Length: 287
Image 1 (spheres, rainbow, N blue to C red):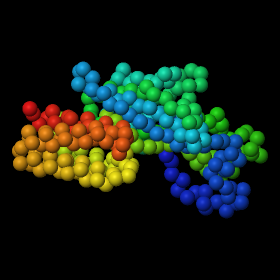
Image 2 (cartoon, one colour):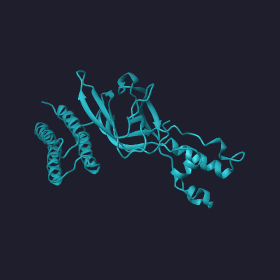
Image 3 (cartoon, helix red, strand yellow):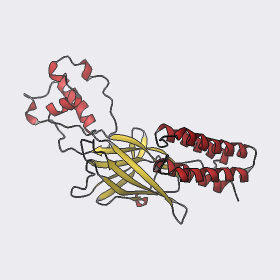
Image 4 (cartoon, rainbow, N blue to C red):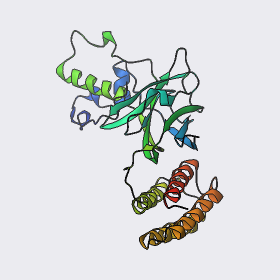
């Protein structure tokens, strides 16, 4: 169940009884439960332009070797309605629906089919796809850890749980359905009347975010970032002077630079985020 990340509100810290002076993991175990949020995951993406000008986003879900659970659910923030027919599952999985509200955001979700096609610890699974006309933007993904232990053991209590025990169980149950989250890219709605100037501002912000998320990194990265900034700022100045052809050429130089740095200082998330957005702006600047 995709319930997102609940907040404890300090309740456990205010419980005086030594029976409950434990970590949340230990507390859940004492009630015959196991928390779900024990996954460290990564979602890598590739973006392909289709013949009808739509974009196909394909994701590889990676379960870290340090995870403590297999992955039994994948959700991607999309913030726009996407038909289920435009969602494809990875082998052995099923496209659930779009869009499910989680913590005030809209997510497309996938889950395993019959059998045990979970993403094992240290393994990866490729083939989750979304087709959309929307350009790439920074998005959140969530990976749900699998556990077979859901409810408190019936023999844990002498009769009904006390009010205090009931509150603790409720807290554990909400955490039990928690998920691990991370950053990736995905379809991001933009205004139909967005101008080249506003799209450039959006691209510049995406470049800054890529650096802050570590998607642009490595020895000597400062020089790479300065070079990318110089090309973007030059294009921004050219657009402000209505020199669209010059701006297009400056953005083409920007694209050439990120292509040269792919796999070196840029990972695929940064590469596709910046490249697809830059090429779209070039198309809007005219011949």
